[in-house]
View 1 (cartoon, rainbow, N blue to C red):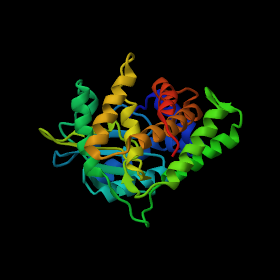
View 2: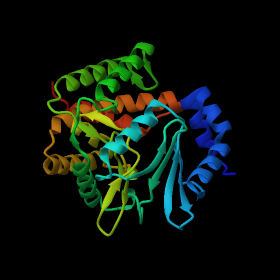
View 3: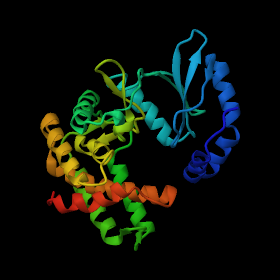
View 4: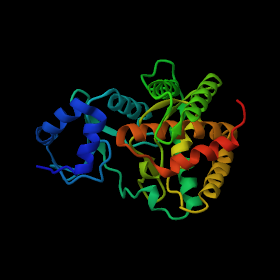
Length: 301
């Protein structure tokens, strides 16, 4: 029996409601099923957020990673994204059971997170290499969420909260929804994106090689995929200077549009803050502060 942290249990119940409760009730049987089907022993988990993720040892001694999630469209999108990336700058799938929300993944070693790199310039260089490896033009038939769906998600939040939600005012919701619309209508070439790429989702795989994990899968602008990275691992003081340095490097290295980064940064910061309030009743201060930072730098699209 593997005990689950109380905070993780609360998150599963909050996000997945009745389906989450059922999943938690059958969790131990799910563990037993995984161990029997793949002949593995599941070890204590890594720090948990929205899914159960743990190392496991096969009978031959090789280590793998087991990821268990409540079956959902989001879980299916992650699997689709992993299959499409097919190991290109991304962890590889060993096996999958969509019906039961089970992923068996390769174990990346040494597995050090990019968040452990203290030199921000070095971390940004590494992240840019991973981004360059991941991004490819998207096909029209891909079963992956799009930035248009995120636009609709924010519109729905606005419709349900016409006077605002938490610290997000109705004016912010209106501006962010309009920005999403303008950006989506002006995308010239959509790409297959990670969708949640930041310092904690990039792991070291060799002496000088790194790969991404935990893709949400997203079709949209490349500029959108840098926002999560920009807003993670920021200092408490002079954080805007750090963001500017990251943007300066990424725009030059990856041939990105600085103004579209600012606009996507504003729109996504509003959406991410709303999501956090809906799921947890609170929000990330860095994302909330970034709303005004990005908006001050936006120009009409």
